[in-house]
Length: 188
Image 1 (spheres, rainbow, N blue to C red):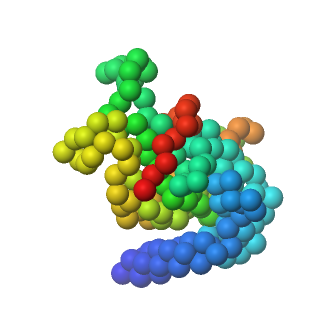
Image 2 (image 1 turned 90 degrees about the horizontal axis):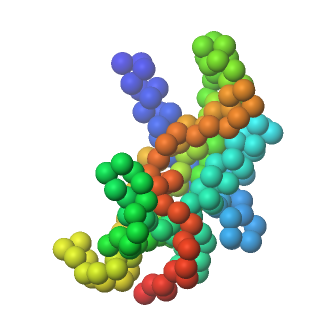
């Protein structure tokens, strides 16, 4: 019972601090993925936290491009083996109004240390409205940009680890698309 109460308190604290971090996010010119200036718990970031944040920012920016309406990724068609195919998929783009996160370091276990890890943390993303662009009308919506929907990132947490000097991040659908290869159509 004590563990459950502690889990709830930690969860509420993370949520409150993540929301509070929105006002203190980095990205001075607004063209970068925003990173909170403090850890998810509100404490000062260490140099390792900053390095982890830059790694995550770079990984996200490999797959997402900033435009006037927000951050956009482009989908590709894949065959059953996961190989990219010619052609344009029906759902071509996904767009978030903003992309921002904070870093929450975690304690390394003895096993992690034995395996060469010297940093472990979590990128805690902030919720943001999103929408999709379809190349043709379907039961899911009209051709073009659909309506903005409530965010789907409220509980997105990506594990970050530095092992043997190399940064690693957990797989996530945030990395399924590519940075758009053509001008992204303007939305309404």
